Amino acid sequence: MKKTLMFVIILAFLCAGTMLFAGGESENAASGEVVLTIPHYKAGQNVGGKFFLPQVERFNKKYAGTYKLVIEEIPQDSYQGKIKQLAQQNKLPALIEGADKKWFQDVVIENGLFFDMADWFNSHKAVKDRAIQDSLDYITTADGKITSFPLMVARPIGLFYNSTMVNFDKPVNEMTVDGFQKAMGDQKLAFMTAENAWTTSLFFTSIVVEEGGAEMIWAGVKSPVSDYTTGIWVRSFEKLQDFLQNNASANTLGAAYADAANSFMSKNAAVIANGPWMMGDFASGSEDKWSNGFTGDQVTAAMYPGNMAIFNPTGYFWWVPNNISEEEKEAAMAFLEFIKSPEELEAFMLVEGGTAPNLTASSGYRAKLEENRLLNEMDKAVNADTVFVPLVLDVMPPSVASEDFGRLLPKLIDGTYTPLQFGQELSRKAASALE
Image 1 (cartoon, rainbow, N blue to C red):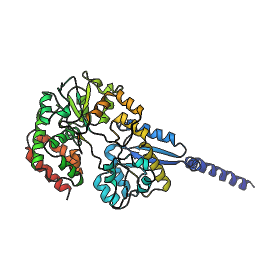
Image 2: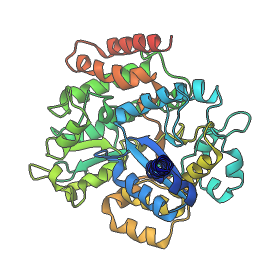
Image 3: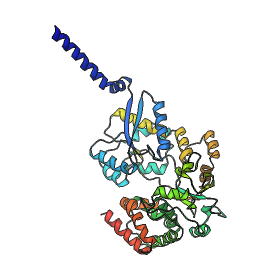
């Protein structure tokens, strides 16, 4: 009798323990809530997390008890490598943002690793109608499969300048590149050579376009450029060398993005090329980033000389893997539908800029846009004659764009390479990367 009683007590304890350790899962199962845990870099101190994390919370609040998204922080530099590793292990998370184009085409599309969104979009016409057509065309395969979620917001990348340091007598987009350099005088641009030479490559794109390279850039998006010794490239490198030697901020050599941003916000450079997401750094509450008398109200937004802006609608953005459960797919698509809703698109544009060409803006959005001087300036800087082109790095093989271009710039600056030799070395690197 005592042994039987003891067995019952032990059994009860084990059952209680099992319930304790399985509590969370049981509660989810009982409530029917689908929880998606995904790695993402827009977290912690990453600038993208300022909007993204609150957006996730808004989604979780709206769908409480039905869907929940949990973010696991991962460094941005490690994100795509992590996704590729998980793909090899057949453990892709339910939501993924972005992908290297070649890898996505050769691995994800070729092996059918993506969830085909075509049927979903056909049953959600209002969402599909908000898509930018060029983006939708790019992500749709020849047999009509939709591989990822299309862009709905165009975010033209231009530049910012400090109106207390330069006094332009006309809008920047009405100048030529030479006219802009002359108007700069002795003032500097916040250039960089480390990482992917981001701010330098942005302004360099405007040089390439003025030299007649717009069509070449668009063609290079489809098929990477391997020859950088043609006339357009060499003339562009000559002009870039001139800017780097005469109008580059003093810390350009070895500068990463944080260094370039600091140069602009400490008045050591009068101009920085960057996207609308930087506007948060000029807003109230960001004073800890300012020095040497810099204030956010000194900044003016503009497009590039030659009336051009950088925007690339081609790419694979948010996508969902095919090997997850139907419930997880429903939750993933619910999140994507949520962040692309009119309300969330407007909230996004008010924080990070951009325009949704197929969205009828609400009166509230228009009123708030008018209140934000920089957003309004950037919005008005784009007109019917503005030329849109992808970033020049988009035409280069990934390793050349992310590593070699910036790594070779110091030799162009100090004259070790002539512009032609710089192009020859880039061509050698590109040929090796494309083998």
